[in-house]
Image (cartoon, rainbow, N blue to C red; front, side, top):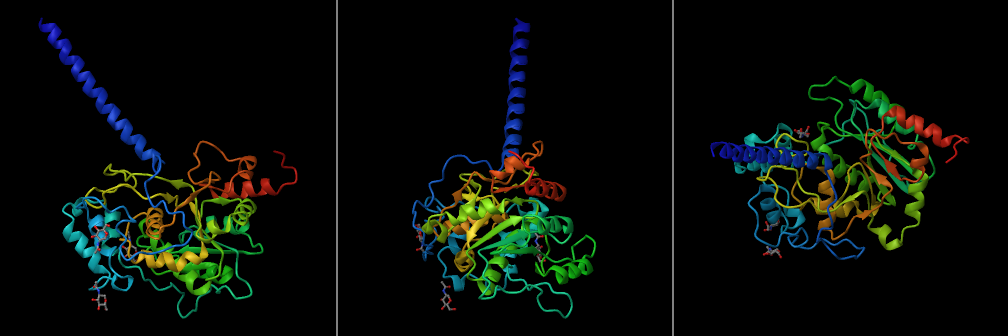
Length: 396
Ligand SMILES: *[C@@H]1O[C@H](CO)[C@@H](O)[C@H](O)[C@H]1NC(C)=O
Ligand SMILES: *[C@@H]1O[C@H](CO)[C@@H](O)[C@H](O)[C@H]1NC(C)=O
Ligand SMILES: *[C@@H]1O[C@H](CO)[C@@H](O)[C@H](O)[C@H]1NC(C)=O
């Protein structure tokens, strides 16, 4: 009698233990699976190729039911009905962050980088970083030399080898192609002072767009927004802009072939890449890409992975207008997805964009020939692949 009770107790304990292991395992695999596609989002169904920005963004961004109390959702509700010109914060850009800190009950428990992001998230105008007494080293697109495709590579000051590998391989000069690197300040917070080296590089190659903000992951959206501003002012007629990380490899001929074959209505409003639909925020404190429930409630919009995606150049001013009315979000690619959704445009997926190539699978040149973009790669692998691809002996 007593022993059967023991047995019951033991089996209950074992079941609980099993359940705990299972829950931990599923939350682990969710982290690894970010950002896993999971079906299609009931987003904007309009297939119109023309961007529009309605006076009230709430319906576009799915804010129709009961409004959650999360800070982002509340801010978006307010911002989504303001005219663009009224959307700058009264009291300067720091006000948004200060208000967020005061209004989010568990702000103090947020990870440090998220707290830093929120405190300065509304500060989006930064001057270019220039070596003392210099003008910009980067030339505007001249009217006689408008690129078809601008390669806008997000790098960071210390990534000298990554940039050089891109210059010597897929980013090497070709008709209709322009290469630029997007960087924050070479004066890091705790890192070495890279001013002299970056200044030399900027003089030598004239392909660095540098801005005076801290170059950290959660400041990537600044690179997107400042790039769009630059494109609007200095290269407004570029057909396409590829926004990409410096550890990617692009099959330029295949990408050009694909772009040139697009139906004109798609090309006009292009947002192309590896598309995730119905990705959800990760809720594991301490895990990567953690988003607290008190900050954001809901699913992510359909978006193209930030590893590399192509947009139509003419959308630059539209995206900037949308960004003025979409509340700041820490992940650049999700934020871009939100801005496109605000404009009523949908991302187009292409299976040739492979932005999370498994580390235990090497990429061989024959596989790459059928892809448009793959990452991450070391500078050494980039050089190796390039040489193999150029070799007349390559047989696939
Ligand atoms: C904006 O649209 C939402 C959803 O359609 C609606 O509930 C809300 O009242 C609108 N806001 C304004 C200020 O018109
Ligand atoms: C927007 O700004 C204009 C001019 O600065 C002002 O007259 C108007 O009341 C503002 N609208 C809102 C909704 O704050
Ligand atoms: C982004 O850069 C700005 C300006 O340098 C800085 O104030 C802010 O803290 C940075 N953001 C993060 C998340 O560190």
